[in-house]
Length: 335
Image 1 (cartoon, rainbow, N blue to C red):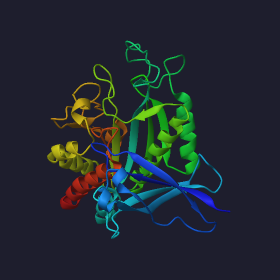
Image 2 (image 1 turned 180 degrees about the vertical axis):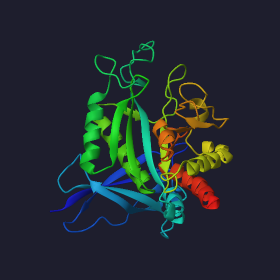
Image 3 (image 1 turned 90 degrees about the horizontal axis):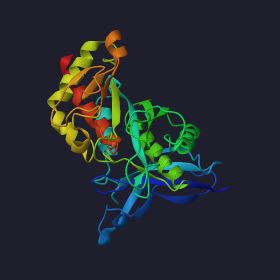
């Protein structure tokens, strides 16, 4: 029996790309093949030369339709089968392959905000909810909005076979988080994009919009990030490698911050558990630092580091590729 393959890709919208999808009916026994789309409608091509190519790179069961239906994440290519200028996965693959011998691995903590009618879900039409405090990992009452969407999304990720590690309510009302990992690149980006797509799709059924904006509400409210945990074979064996990686990130701090998502200066202010985007610091258990070393890592003198700077709207392919290039190059030189 034919099955449905939902082709998913990342478009060329600026400053932050959005996700697109369309359904293909595939004959029984056939694998999803390359397909195409109108790039002039996705900010990826002019109307006079609009064809773009979709090349499948990651497939998983479709937890929404069920049965033998699948989700198909695709890279975007030009018609000569070279990477499209918006194809950041190609950059990530190149970095991962170059330093594969160091076994770089990632876990990403994806924060986001539920919105409805232009306001965070559950917020009053006029004014504001109670101040931040009871929402983080909270339970009960009117303050914990959107939990039914969280539960549906978590189960969908499990049914799709994604490496989801957990979920929790975040500091601002209507703000939540899920974690994907521990995975190598580009798999960390593949699974993060599919998990994001599932969240958007499931929220549709509740008439809710998912925002990955770095600072969805101005003022004394937390922004939304995508803290990125990183390790290599060397960091898992000794603390000196972690220090080397942190110092390397410091030398290229501005380069990284500029590529870590739109609106980063609004979120990285030095308040609300962030370091300023104009400075760089690292330290153990310090949530006000650019790079945090978890207490358990400092105690064990080996493990991983947490880059707290990436925005919720960051491109995981870009962030993973940059961290690999910066840290693994420094670690190779230190040997």
